[in-house]
Image (cartoon, rainbow, N blue to C red; front, side, top):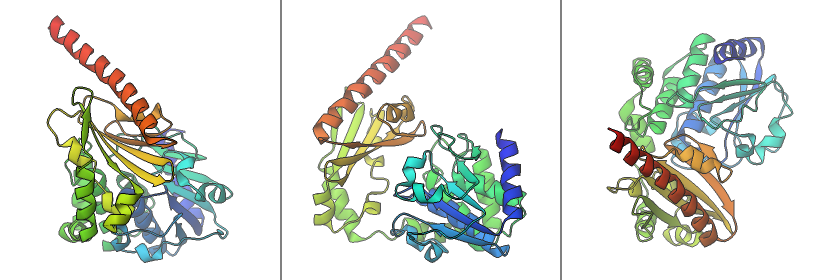
Length: 335
Protein backbone atom coordinates (compact mmCIF):
# COMPACT_ATOMS: atom_id res chain seq x y z
CA UNK A 1 0.00 0.00 0.00
CA UNK A 2 1.55 3.31 -1.06
CA UNK A 3 1.31 6.34 1.18
CA UNK A 4 -1.54 7.99 -0.73
CA UNK A 5 -3.62 4.85 -0.38
CA UNK A 6 -2.58 4.66 3.27
CA UNK A 7 -4.02 8.12 3.94
CA UNK A 8 -7.28 7.16 2.25
CA UNK A 9 -7.47 3.97 4.30
CA UNK A 10 -6.80 5.85 7.56
CA UNK A 11 -9.53 8.33 6.71
CA UNK A 12 -11.96 5.46 6.06
CA UNK A 13 -11.13 3.88 9.42
CA UNK A 14 -11.51 7.17 11.30
CA UNK A 15 -14.84 7.91 9.67
CA UNK A 16 -16.24 4.42 10.26
CA UNK A 17 -15.11 3.94 13.87
CA UNK A 18 -15.90 5.74 17.09
CA UNK A 19 -13.32 4.51 19.65
CA UNK A 20 -9.58 4.79 19.02
CA UNK A 21 -6.36 4.16 20.93
CA UNK A 22 -3.56 6.66 20.26
CA UNK A 23 0.02 6.21 21.46
CA UNK A 24 3.57 7.38 20.84
CA UNK A 25 7.04 6.11 21.68
CA UNK A 26 8.50 5.83 25.17
CA UNK A 27 10.41 8.85 26.46
CA UNK A 28 8.37 10.96 24.02
CA UNK A 29 9.42 14.24 22.46
CA UNK A 30 7.27 17.20 21.48
CA UNK A 31 6.47 15.78 18.02
CA UNK A 32 5.20 12.50 19.47
CA UNK A 33 3.04 14.09 22.17
CA UNK A 34 1.80 17.01 20.05
CA UNK A 35 0.91 14.74 17.12
CA UNK A 36 -1.08 12.48 19.41
CA UNK A 37 -2.82 15.46 21.01
CA UNK A 38 -3.63 17.09 17.67
CA UNK A 39 -5.26 13.96 16.27
CA UNK A 40 -6.91 13.03 19.57
CA UNK A 41 -8.41 16.48 20.11
CA UNK A 42 -9.63 16.63 16.49
CA UNK A 43 -11.32 13.22 16.84
CA UNK A 44 -12.89 14.30 20.13
CA UNK A 45 -14.24 17.48 18.53
CA UNK A 46 -15.80 15.31 15.82
CA UNK A 47 -17.73 13.33 18.46
CA UNK A 48 -15.37 10.34 18.52
CA UNK A 49 -13.94 8.74 21.67
CA UNK A 50 -10.13 8.70 21.46
CA UNK A 51 -8.03 7.32 24.32
CA UNK A 52 -4.52 8.82 24.35
CA UNK A 53 -2.01 6.75 26.32
CA UNK A 54 1.66 6.81 27.27
CA UNK A 55 3.88 4.35 29.09
CA UNK A 56 4.71 6.90 31.83
CA UNK A 57 3.25 10.25 32.91
CA UNK A 58 3.94 13.07 30.46
CA UNK A 59 6.95 15.00 31.84
CA UNK A 60 7.46 18.76 31.79
CA UNK A 61 7.56 20.78 29.64
CA UNK A 62 5.44 18.46 27.44
CA UNK A 63 2.72 18.47 30.09
CA UNK A 64 2.18 22.17 29.28
CA UNK A 65 0.91 21.37 25.78
CA UNK A 66 -2.77 22.12 25.38
CA UNK A 67 -4.82 19.01 26.13
CA UNK A 68 -1.94 17.11 27.78
CA UNK A 69 -4.08 16.48 30.86
CA UNK A 70 -6.19 14.13 28.72
CA UNK A 71 -3.28 11.72 28.18
CA UNK A 72 -3.53 8.68 30.46
CA UNK A 73 -1.15 6.09 31.82
CA UNK A 74 -3.20 2.91 31.85
CA UNK A 75 -2.57 -0.76 32.50
CA UNK A 76 -5.58 -2.04 30.59
CA UNK A 77 -6.96 -0.72 27.33
CA UNK A 78 -10.65 -0.53 26.63
CA UNK A 79 -12.27 -1.70 23.40
CA UNK A 80 -11.27 0.30 20.32
CA UNK A 81 -11.94 0.20 16.60
CA UNK A 82 -8.27 0.86 15.74
CA UNK A 83 -4.92 1.69 17.30
CA UNK A 84 -2.90 4.61 15.92
CA UNK A 85 0.82 4.76 16.77
CA UNK A 86 2.43 8.11 16.06
CA UNK A 87 6.08 9.12 15.57
CA UNK A 88 7.38 5.65 16.42
CA UNK A 89 9.81 3.88 14.10
CA UNK A 90 9.61 0.44 15.70
CA UNK A 91 7.16 -1.34 17.98
CA UNK A 92 10.01 -1.88 20.45
CA UNK A 93 10.07 1.89 20.95
CA UNK A 94 6.62 1.66 22.54
CA UNK A 95 8.19 0.00 25.57
CA UNK A 96 5.65 -1.68 27.82
CA UNK A 97 2.74 -0.32 25.78
CA UNK A 98 3.62 -2.41 22.74
CA UNK A 99 2.19 -5.81 23.75
CA UNK A 100 -1.01 -4.23 25.09
CA UNK A 101 -1.67 -2.11 22.00
CA UNK A 102 -1.19 -4.86 19.43
CA UNK A 103 -4.41 -6.57 20.48
CA UNK A 104 -6.51 -3.87 18.81
CA UNK A 105 -6.53 -4.02 15.03
CA UNK A 106 -6.10 -2.49 12.58
CA UNK A 107 -2.78 -1.11 13.79
CA UNK A 108 -2.04 2.20 12.06
CA UNK A 109 1.56 3.42 11.85
CA UNK A 110 2.01 7.19 11.20
CA UNK A 111 5.65 8.25 11.19
CA UNK A 112 8.44 10.13 9.40
CA UNK A 113 11.54 8.17 10.47
CA UNK A 114 13.60 6.78 7.59
CA UNK A 115 14.34 3.64 9.60
CA UNK A 116 10.66 2.85 10.30
CA UNK A 117 10.04 -0.92 10.22
CA UNK A 118 6.51 -0.52 8.75
CA UNK A 119 5.01 -2.58 11.54
CA UNK A 120 1.42 -1.52 10.99
CA UNK A 121 -1.50 -3.04 9.14
CA UNK A 122 -1.65 0.41 7.56
CA UNK A 123 1.63 2.34 7.20
CA UNK A 124 1.68 6.06 6.47
CA UNK A 125 5.45 6.62 6.53
CA UNK A 126 7.08 9.56 4.75
CA UNK A 127 10.70 10.26 5.75
CA UNK A 128 10.80 13.53 3.80
CA UNK A 129 8.27 15.14 6.15
CA UNK A 130 9.48 17.62 8.74
CA UNK A 131 7.53 15.92 11.51
CA UNK A 132 4.75 13.51 12.27
CA UNK A 133 2.67 16.57 13.16
CA UNK A 134 2.83 17.69 9.54
CA UNK A 135 1.46 14.29 8.51
CA UNK A 136 -1.29 14.42 11.13
CA UNK A 137 -2.42 17.71 9.62
CA UNK A 138 -2.90 15.96 6.28
CA UNK A 139 -5.01 13.23 7.91
CA UNK A 140 -7.14 15.77 9.77
CA UNK A 141 -7.65 17.74 6.58
CA UNK A 142 -8.51 14.70 4.45
CA UNK A 143 -10.88 13.34 7.11
CA UNK A 144 -12.46 16.80 7.45
CA UNK A 145 -12.05 16.72 11.23
CA UNK A 146 -12.46 19.96 13.21
CA UNK A 147 -9.25 21.96 13.38
CA UNK A 148 -9.58 24.57 16.12
CA UNK A 149 -6.90 26.56 17.97
CA UNK A 150 -5.90 23.71 20.32
CA UNK A 151 -5.34 21.29 17.43
CA UNK A 152 -3.53 23.98 15.41
CA UNK A 153 -1.31 24.83 18.38
CA UNK A 154 -0.23 21.22 18.77
CA UNK A 155 0.53 20.79 15.07
CA UNK A 156 2.58 23.99 15.17
CA UNK A 157 4.43 22.74 18.28
CA UNK A 158 5.23 19.42 16.57
CA UNK A 159 6.68 21.13 13.50
CA UNK A 160 8.55 23.71 15.56
CA UNK A 161 10.00 21.01 17.81
CA UNK A 162 11.24 18.65 15.11
CA UNK A 163 12.68 21.43 12.93
CA UNK A 164 14.61 22.90 15.88
CA UNK A 165 12.51 26.08 15.76
CA UNK A 166 12.81 26.08 11.95
CA UNK A 167 16.63 25.86 12.01
CA UNK A 168 17.23 22.26 10.82
CA UNK A 169 17.51 21.16 7.21
CA UNK A 170 14.10 19.47 7.38
CA UNK A 171 12.51 22.94 7.44
CA UNK A 172 10.83 22.56 4.06
CA UNK A 173 8.56 25.01 2.27
CA UNK A 174 5.72 22.56 2.95
CA UNK A 175 6.45 22.60 6.68
CA UNK A 176 6.46 26.40 6.70
CA UNK A 177 3.17 26.51 4.79
CA UNK A 178 1.52 24.15 7.28
CA UNK A 179 2.93 26.15 10.20
CA UNK A 180 1.59 29.38 8.67
CA UNK A 181 -1.84 27.81 8.21
CA UNK A 182 -1.83 26.71 11.85
CA UNK A 183 -1.21 30.33 12.89
CA UNK A 184 -4.16 31.35 10.72
CA UNK A 185 -6.25 28.73 12.53
CA UNK A 186 -5.37 30.00 15.98
CA UNK A 187 -1.89 28.75 16.93
CA UNK A 188 0.11 31.42 18.78
CA UNK A 189 3.84 30.89 18.09
CA UNK A 190 5.16 32.93 21.00
CA UNK A 191 2.85 31.07 23.39
CA UNK A 192 4.03 27.69 22.09
CA UNK A 193 7.64 28.79 22.53
CA UNK A 194 6.96 30.15 26.01
CA UNK A 195 5.40 26.88 27.12
CA UNK A 196 8.06 24.65 25.63
CA UNK A 197 11.36 26.56 25.72
CA UNK A 198 11.23 29.78 27.71
CA UNK A 199 10.48 28.42 31.18
CA UNK A 200 13.56 26.39 32.07
CA UNK A 201 13.92 25.33 35.72
CA UNK A 202 17.15 26.08 37.55
CA UNK A 203 17.84 22.35 37.63
CA UNK A 204 18.25 22.36 33.85
CA UNK A 205 21.05 24.93 34.03
CA UNK A 206 22.79 22.99 36.79
CA UNK A 207 22.51 19.83 34.69
CA UNK A 208 23.89 21.68 31.66
CA UNK A 209 26.88 22.84 33.71
CA UNK A 210 27.63 19.26 34.67
CA UNK A 211 27.17 18.05 31.10
CA UNK A 212 29.53 20.66 29.63
CA UNK A 213 32.23 19.55 32.06
CA UNK A 214 32.19 16.13 30.35
CA UNK A 215 32.60 17.48 26.81
CA UNK A 216 35.26 15.54 24.89
CA UNK A 217 36.35 15.30 21.26
CA UNK A 218 37.45 12.32 19.20
CA UNK A 219 38.21 11.31 15.61
CA UNK A 220 40.32 14.38 14.78
CA UNK A 221 37.81 16.47 16.76
CA UNK A 222 35.05 15.52 14.32
CA UNK A 223 33.06 13.80 17.06
CA UNK A 224 31.94 15.69 20.16
CA UNK A 225 30.51 13.76 23.13
CA UNK A 226 28.83 14.78 26.38
CA UNK A 227 27.75 12.30 29.06
CA UNK A 228 25.06 12.49 31.73
CA UNK A 229 24.93 9.90 34.49
CA UNK A 230 22.04 9.15 36.81
CA UNK A 231 24.07 10.70 39.63
CA UNK A 232 24.33 13.97 37.70
CA UNK A 233 20.55 14.12 37.26
CA UNK A 234 20.08 13.39 40.95
CA UNK A 235 22.56 16.01 42.15
CA UNK A 236 21.09 18.65 39.83
CA UNK A 237 17.54 17.78 40.90
CA UNK A 238 16.75 17.34 37.20
CA UNK A 239 14.57 15.00 35.14
CA UNK A 240 15.13 13.45 31.72
CA UNK A 241 13.44 16.23 29.73
CA UNK A 242 15.73 18.81 31.33
CA UNK A 243 18.45 17.47 29.01
CA UNK A 244 16.37 18.09 25.87
CA UNK A 245 18.56 19.54 23.06
CA UNK A 246 21.78 19.35 25.10
CA UNK A 247 23.19 17.40 22.16
CA UNK A 248 23.21 20.67 20.20
CA UNK A 249 26.07 22.05 22.30
CA UNK A 250 28.77 19.75 20.89
CA UNK A 251 27.08 20.09 17.49
CA UNK A 252 27.68 23.84 17.57
CA UNK A 253 31.46 23.40 17.93
CA UNK A 254 33.40 24.22 14.76
CA UNK A 255 34.75 21.08 13.09
CA UNK A 256 32.33 18.67 14.76
CA UNK A 257 30.52 16.46 12.25
CA UNK A 258 28.81 14.10 14.72
CA UNK A 259 27.50 15.26 18.10
CA UNK A 260 26.61 12.72 20.79
CA UNK A 261 24.80 12.98 24.10
CA UNK A 262 25.08 9.84 26.21
CA UNK A 263 22.46 9.65 28.94
CA UNK A 264 22.27 6.92 31.56
CA UNK A 265 18.75 5.49 31.73
CA UNK A 266 19.23 2.70 34.28
CA UNK A 267 22.05 0.75 35.88
CA UNK A 268 24.31 -0.34 32.99
CA UNK A 269 21.87 1.14 30.43
CA UNK A 270 22.58 4.18 28.25
CA UNK A 271 20.93 6.09 25.43
CA UNK A 272 23.10 7.62 22.69
CA UNK A 273 21.48 10.62 20.98
CA UNK A 274 23.23 11.51 17.71
CA UNK A 275 23.17 14.67 15.59
CA UNK A 276 24.90 15.29 12.26
CA UNK A 277 26.17 18.53 10.77
CA UNK A 278 25.63 17.16 7.27
CA UNK A 279 28.49 14.85 6.36
CA UNK A 280 27.37 11.69 8.18
CA UNK A 281 24.03 9.87 8.06
CA UNK A 282 23.66 9.23 11.78
CA UNK A 283 20.59 7.05 11.22
CA UNK A 284 22.83 4.47 9.61
CA UNK A 285 25.30 4.79 12.48
CA UNK A 286 22.43 4.18 14.90
CA UNK A 287 21.20 1.17 12.91
CA UNK A 288 24.61 -0.44 13.43
CA UNK A 289 23.79 -0.53 17.14
CA UNK A 290 20.12 -1.53 16.87
CA UNK A 291 18.70 1.99 16.78
CA UNK A 292 17.39 4.30 14.10
CA UNK A 293 16.05 7.74 13.29
CA UNK A 294 16.78 10.39 10.69
CA UNK A 295 19.89 11.21 8.67
CA UNK A 296 20.55 14.25 10.85
CA UNK A 297 19.06 13.04 14.16
CA UNK A 298 19.05 9.47 15.47
CA UNK A 299 19.75 7.36 18.51
CA UNK A 300 20.20 3.93 20.04
CA UNK A 301 20.28 2.24 23.44
CA UNK A 302 22.95 -0.04 24.87
CA UNK A 303 23.29 -2.22 27.96
CA UNK A 304 26.59 -2.96 29.64
CA UNK A 305 29.78 -1.09 30.35
CA UNK A 306 29.72 2.54 29.17
CA UNK A 307 33.37 2.76 28.15
CA UNK A 308 33.07 -0.43 26.10
CA UNK A 309 29.97 0.90 24.35
CA UNK A 310 31.59 4.27 23.71
CA UNK A 311 34.72 2.63 22.27
CA UNK A 312 32.61 0.50 19.91
CA UNK A 313 30.67 3.57 18.77
CA UNK A 314 33.82 5.61 18.19
CA UNK A 315 35.37 2.79 16.16
CA UNK A 316 32.34 2.76 13.85
CA UNK A 317 32.17 6.57 13.70
CA UNK A 318 35.87 6.71 12.82
CA UNK A 319 35.35 4.20 10.00
CA UNK A 320 32.42 6.18 8.58
CA UNK A 321 34.26 9.51 8.84
CA UNK A 322 37.39 8.10 7.22
CA UNK A 323 35.26 6.90 4.29
CA UNK A 324 33.53 10.27 4.02
CA UNK A 325 36.76 12.26 4.11
CA UNK A 326 38.38 9.89 1.62
CA UNK A 327 35.50 10.24 -0.82
CA UNK A 328 35.52 14.03 -0.42
CA UNK A 329 39.28 14.11 -1.07
CA UNK A 330 38.94 11.85 -4.12
CA UNK A 331 36.09 13.94 -5.51
CA UNK A 332 38.15 17.07 -4.97
CA UNK A 333 41.13 15.53 -6.71
CA UNK A 334 39.04 14.57 -9.71
CA UNK A 335 37.72 18.13 -9.94
